[in-house]
Length: 206
Image (cartoon, rainbow, N blue to C red; front, side, top):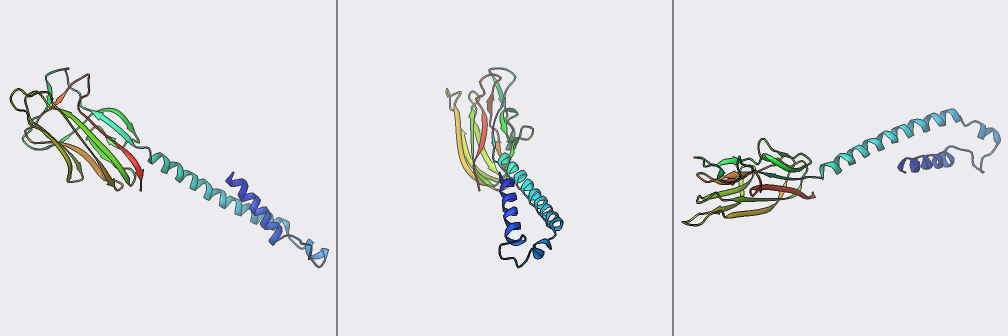
């Protein structure tokens, strides 16, 4: 459609600016117009506009593709019960290696890090199931900054609690978002129910 409009505009331009009009003084003046020169200029102009239209269309397609961003990943254990991740003597990155959805491939299942492909507002959420009678602390980080957290203290007789939290973040291109497991805490894992998950998606580009 865009190309058809461009060609029609060019034809109109030739008639109004370079063609013979009713006010021409003589037929000789009309015949002096070099039609081959005009066609050559028209062809060059159309080729240039076509190249620009193709480049613009390609950029729009890439932009639309970049706006489709969503992921969910989980931690799975070797067995359906009595499986856990941690504890560690230092706070560590919490990796969710089992990818359920990764539209846009912005989440890295090997590192557990989500990297923003476009500037925008993003929503992130996690859930974690505490392992039996042990404490569990979880946090979302943006870069080196702790953003939101959850902590479950397991008192005597209290077990199998689940915590969750979420946040909306404004991210620049390349900003990393990831999870941490707190020092000396545990998180339950399983091979069936996927209690512990990490998710995020793009709300709107900015």
